Image (cartoon, rainbow, N blue to C red):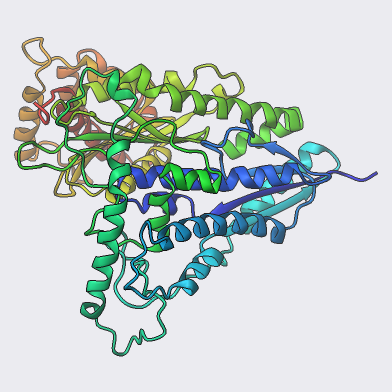
Length: 549
């Protein structure tokens, strides 16, 4: 008897591709590309004889398509690599053809000598990971394929692309895309950026000009007709392409695929609504806007998939994937309608990224409103799911000042989410990031996040300045400092109980759950005191509303 073979595949880099973004538009472009590549692989596999896609579910929905694919059938790594690169190269070709069109970006006076650079990005941008398994039962084969994939991911074979000259102004990791990028006359021994500066500036000035009209039309959103907070004189941050930008080829492609005409030519799903960049940075007549960024991921989803495979086989995996993707679709589509607080950038199922901001920067979102929405996220996560309700959620939430670069914001989100997982999962890490780059953060289980709403000062009110001021005075007197010989943290808990009446006893009896497990009593005391201190910092910044008044 022949046992079924299962193939598990994914590709990389994903997070790095998303995080190398300056504008909100870049995030969407990256998400559109990743979903499109995954969708094309799924479509191609479903056309192959003796192959069936088990997950992801909702195979006809491109938006939010995960890049992890489980297949019933035998598919070689070379075949997967070819499917992926063919679609990626098509995206590059369409974008390059658009730029080379004299009606768009092409300048007749410039020598377009960058064929080799576009080909290199077509061949070396992605790395495919692949695993296979076959067992006496279908669940055994699925688990073996998943484990084989994880083992192979430990070995990397990615190739970097060499370049000379100045680097992109976004990441500094790749060369600036301009017509002379691959010219034979570029000798690194004699290359001087000043010699190429004029040509680069001409190229980006032209791109800025030809994309300006689409930028103006995109700024008129569907939501703007519904929102009372819209302002006709709202100033948009930046343009589709700013003349001062110096982007690499992949960065330029992420920007261009958000144009409807280019997306149509590629066959890619377009942005389903009008588009508006976030006005975050301060201008001459207004303060910078604080925004909230949330990045979430299901806990131990791989282990859950193995459990489902053992219990329910293929059909269980299909049902689980369908539930996850259906939740992601609804979360993406309904977030703004339900909250009026911003938009979801992607929601692939068990992972998502979104931003809370005001479309009218003159009326920024209050931090308390952002926190109150965050308190509802776990219940939203558990909504309309059965199998997936057994998967917990870890989230990084970053409340960030307007002058912090977007790429740094995304890194803070990633770090906050990882911290939530490392502290025990099923919790959220809230990080407040200032323009200086400094930050305060606090990690809390979802079931105790409401503690910030239970604050009561000495007057029975919720003026966080009282506890914040008292904490500052105690810190100045080194009241919370510990030595290895003095590990009693009773004073910190008594201080906590004073402002959160009746909660001190609960905290002391649930330290392992709330703060984390520590074998060493000194570490336990320090961690508990820091947890209380950070709770007060976060509460003062988010719940007393000192930042956006």
